[in-house]
Image (cartoon, rainbow, N blue to C red; front, top):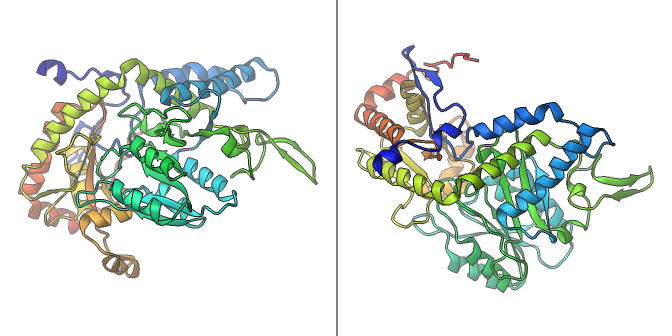
Length: 453
């Protein structure tokens, strides 16, 4: 069993896993990517499909040329594949193609802001990525569902706020899995609470979708997800595509977020007739290559099975967590005692700035991680114990080094051998931190990335 696990069956499916990268001493080593929560490398199947389709690539909805009709069929049929992937309603829901999750949420916030009604409150949460916070701020009254001391969402506080606003809540919008701690939220319980108080729910599935199956549940169910968004670039599918899924009826009213060709049925200088959704919200020439990549990634996930992916990633996550927590001076910012976490470990080493830790891992050991606030600033500030007053210093001193943490995020293609190498590297840094601090703080431009392309 252990030998089978060590021989990762997913690794051969991913591009670039054996790439050599330069170190500060001039040597080369096989790169380890532990920054999968930001962006995953592509599936080989995705790149193969892109190359296969490239000779047939053409504009969609543009006449009767054979390539154009073929491209249009792929574009439109892709919506059904995506709906089936998340169990959206085949007739009532629409799939709007977007650039990414951020773009999807901005579109939805604009669409909902045009519906003039008494509901003017959006409930976001303390753990959200900026993409699920900032787009709502200039259009609605935004309040934030609280978190506990470990950083988990408090459902009791959600219900308290739903009662507090007495029918004024237009939307509850939360992440399916936190990009800092990896905590998985009970999205269907959240939906039940939202619907109990006659409001709708948006789920940001960007972090969860490469790790577990999403089920939007049927219309009429208390657990139904009204809106769902996610990005392809976290699903082993590059080229910049994403989706916004929701009921067609919700997108028929008002102006589209972006205006131009493809969004219109008929135009004169005096009048505009917008096309029906989803075309109404897909102005301009679409990113067909990105959509081809997303569709092929979904097919690959369906073939592999999320149960197999989940079992492997959890074993790898548990293995890494158990070893990392034993390193001297390590502070870990999530709680792994419950089985509700995707494969993310946020940490710091006492006495070292997070940026230096990230640099050393890259420059000395060829290991890529992420450091900083991960576009979830209030969440990180809360986990680190910083108050609004504390953060005022950094607003007033823009050149000051910002606080933050280091994040390890594991993908299905990572291995136990890589975890051992990472733990060895981290332990080496912790045991020799004075040496590394002196080396990297004295010359922040110590190491320049070589052009290897």
